[in-house]
Amino acid sequence: MKSQQCFFKQNNIQHIDYKDIDILKRFINPHGRILAKKRSGVSAKNQRNLALAIKRARFMALMPFVAR
Image 1 (cartoon, rainbow, N blue to C red):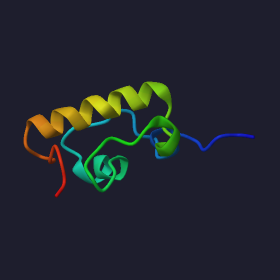
Image 2: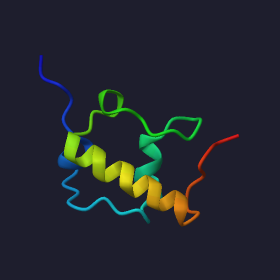
Image 3: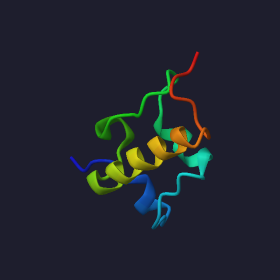
């Protein structure tokens, strides 16, 4: 069974930018936590870059750490 293709490879996105909040919001759950690689369907390399981008966006106050 072939797994779902990575969102970033599908849409030809080379660089995951922490300022692109619309894309990053797709990979966090309603409580504000980062989705697991299995749930998001992102490749391992892009999952690491995604987590880093989300953490940077949180630090720069572009995204919340927790959702109420």
